[in-house]
Length: 275
Image (cartoon, rainbow, N blue to C red; front, side, top):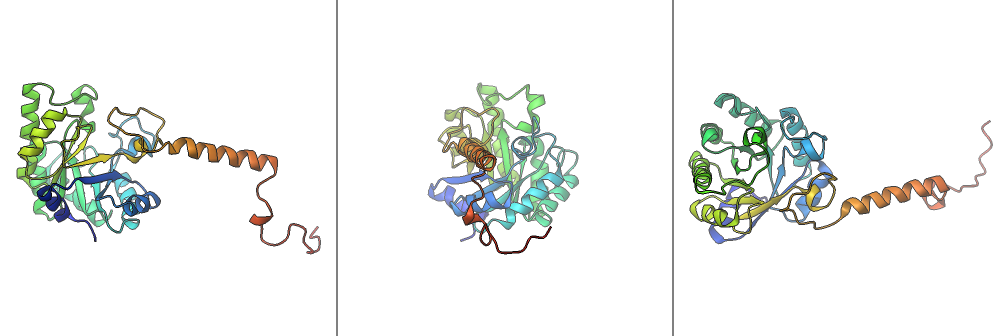
């Protein structure tokens, strides 16, 4: 059965944990979808793991739309959520609604995600009123890394925790159906989850969330850069793939590939010489 925003509400009510993974192309979307994941996030993390940028700030609307279209074509059951990239919603409310609409109309997403709490509540409200489902994102917000002074744990002291709660409540009041919370201490996260009626999807926020999200490159060992502390490596696929590539190189250079079984017709043919 196709997952919808109602799936998230029902999971929160029943205590069932939600799952979200990233995908950026058709083939991986099919794999993630077939595993039974509730939601696929076409994250602006594609800037790091797909496009090779040092951060997510350089990602454009065209980048997200391009990859979301591919993911949507490969997804049957999971709810497809598209990230709104940096400066696609901050300038004005009308800009935010227009770009969110593009992600559904052109990208074929079923929902959008944008970073921020209190400061983007007006944008969230307007997008929701345009019949576009929204996932919020609070705590560590990578698009704001320059203003935050780096990638730091959020909500560590009383004042910071209070701001986090205010952001969560603002996102909920604005109409978001779920909120991603990144890099927050577990006990603060527990209180935040209990205080909100919408599901919390944690990343680096401990076990007291209504669900979890990871970047699949991190969990599969496909990204050679920094691996965050909160990531569990479920496979070392990067090493396996590299080994396969190396074997291909070795066999081609040795002349053992392709063999007779990979050819159309006999290697020694009766066809007359053409030169």
